[in-house]
Picture 1 (cartoon, helix red, strand yellow):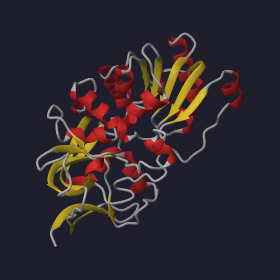
Picture 2 (picture 1 turned 180 degrees about the vertical axis):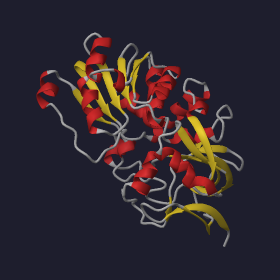
Picture 3 (picture 1 turned 90 degrees about the horizontal axis):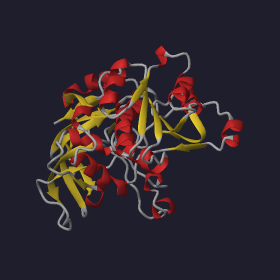
Length: 343
């Protein structure tokens, strides 16, 4: 049996262990990928630090932002060849359930996620179905390109399909971490006038570089919603919360004009307070946004290929596999924008 190195997750509140595990073997319709990079995501931290259970019981391999080079293809695969550069979706869909057939693959009733339902990308090799694999153009760096799999596609779906940003909309984005800064990029690319909100001034400066026309630091104002309503002449058209904090969710709703749309991207298990009378009387919209359907991946890849969305500046730290626990420490400390594991 051929072996490979992987970072194995044994359960919450313990470090990942670098071990030799069996190298995957492919079957019909599959490709074997030599992993080039895999992004470190806060979703992984939910499993590692907060006790959120994975569907596959540990021990298992985490990681769902994967890029690499095809090393082997099954005999029946015609769309890929050895040496092709690829990225993998962060979530796969069945294609046949009611939600998939109505164009909502991202909330497939049978969705599967690498590093959750089955072993993921913090390993030297990864096998995937060819139909769930995407070519990565030469214009996009192979390692940095891995973040498209989640950190770019999730903002695309949120901005285009859920927040429905159109040119000229004022858009307030709460949180300028990895997802939040890409949300800034995506909303600006869609023609929105973006206002970024974060407690870290250095992240607000990054938000300006990625397209925000204005920023708000809650430490500098008495009330964030009041400040935004003043800046926008009565309230923003759209707000997007990328933190997962009930307080900022409430602020995001409160900063909108009558008829505004609040989009929830950040995850929290805690309840938020909702002023139902305000939502009803002012005909507000409150929508959730989860991931991205595979049908939108080619559009995200194209936006990165032509430079409309930048991926290289988003990757602020790279670690080898054997330093993966140090990599996740950077996330815990809130350092940088996006950290990736490279092979």
